[in-house]
Length: 354
Image (cartoon, rainbow, N blue to C red; front, side, top):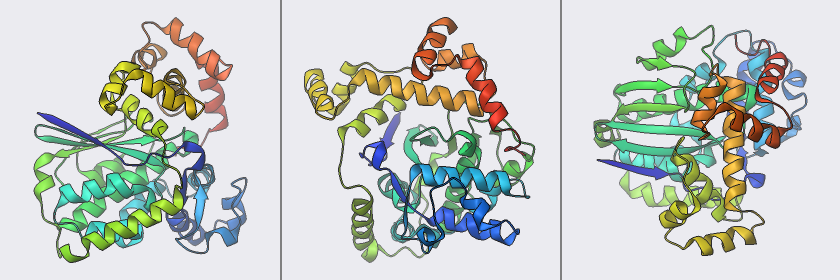
């Protein structure tokens, strides 16, 4: 028996903005190490006045660039793990307020699915229950490139720490899957999550016992729950002025993993005909094939930049029957062959993973 849920963000990627929460936390940590703010903000498009408080809104690319700078400049390996482990629901702004108002972990997960963007998220969240296992799948909305390890470390460790803090007990972890190569400080993962850690995986996932969903939130206040959700919705509306069916289609494409659906399957999941879906996507200047190719392109870039998977393995994950078809498609998307792209990325990002 299994069930699946996706986060409730439906905005186009061009307007993906997030609060400066994580940037401020990383800034504080790096300044304490003696790193200059000028170096942290270099080539990010962020000025010091933009990050005065948690309510400042930054673009996806600004946060990605800042995170990459921070990961490169820190003298202490595992920056994302440290930042996430030190966070509490209070650091998550209105989302933290909503989480504290939930009755149990199942309600907390639902709040995260709906409102994670209010807490500075650079990913979309998919959630699946498969018998005794619950799986939180974190999917970057755009390629994170050299920032991927640090972003996933922070998101994974912050989620893990928050859920343990809310229940006052250890989270029954089963496995942690990560889509990038094993860093030199990989033992820190085992110490924090206390479960098997698998690198170079197709997805970034927190896997835990589904029985944990029934655990109660300590000091939950059910009377404030409705107000908390209202505040979260208002904050999300300020970040995302226009809902878009484009995001719903992206989610359903990503949800299938390497078994990418066709337009008939997606339209069926949405409860509309394929003709209606084509028309709606057309009104937004796109098509199902464009979104499918864009999803494959983003995943391919992420795998090539952040994992050690072979090209034939990546081709299979992206639904291509052989490596030559994948090579042709990738060159069409980027103008480069996959092997050349990986080599250039490795040269540009040398030294980021410590």
